[in-house]
Image (cartoon, rainbow, N blue to C red):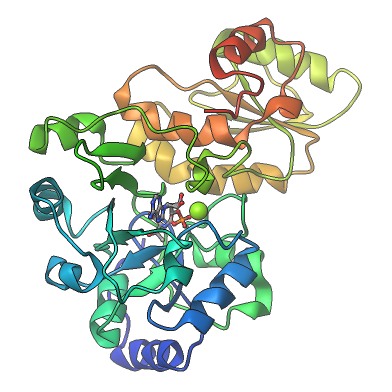
Length: 347
Ligand code: TXA
Ligand code: MG
């Protein structure tokens, strides 16, 4: 894994590109970002265009250091300051009231802005060189699987993104934990590597239930983080049985599981991402992309274990699946449907 710094000349060229309003893909410890000068509305609009993302869905502004916070946020409540001091640089995004100068193109027209200080040395080099905020969503097309390697960014955008800084495989592999500090009670909007327990150790009043009706969090839409192949979540107990049924007529099936298969099947591609949540998270998007390309007509994902350590992974998996992707043969799907509403992907 390359997490070393890049040669300064390469950073300088990327900084120059940003200054000219171009788009630069760069690594963070979570996933790769598609970066634009946050003060340049045309560059920001280009990010939305490239991603195919609705203009009302806001981007995260990446900054070099907590000290730059007041340039982007109107007020920094004590809870936000406490979280920033504990977790920055790192995989945490804070939603705050936006400073007047923050462009509405970045915030999707809202009065709030999402801000993060990434820890990845290359992201740090880029931010330091640029000296201002970089607005960046994950470097994937809207609704697709997020990128954790440069080759994923190329798969998503081809030649449309000319500058891609290579920081190797992302260490965490899942998007940042997002906490809104806009209202009196801070609220977890998106689970990530930093868990609710860790947040509460610093700010005990953080509310855990995301506002599921918020249209401003695209990750909350049904079908997000999704491969093109139909994806269904299946219990461990029924996994081999479902594989058997689906492959009976010679169709190929792809499986993402926390264990090896119990029976061999020549029509199946099996990725074992293991039973450690952090290692699984690192493998998740690589695994989904591999399985998506395997020629299978169906991706089956073994339901991950209970417990908070798996919250972020479970969240992404349930959003990657959706109603029409449910395999009827699994009786447990009915239970999942009851729990998650019409579609398994629904929060
Ligand atoms: O780890 C990450 O957060 C990565 C890296 C590149 O930093 N970025 C990322 O960006 O995941 P994106 O755009 O794919 O997801 C950002 C999320 C979206 O769900 C967006 O709606 C939410 O942040 N967001 C941004 N601004 C917001 C705001 N003002 N209020 C609520 N949610 C906001
Ligand atoms: Mg994204």
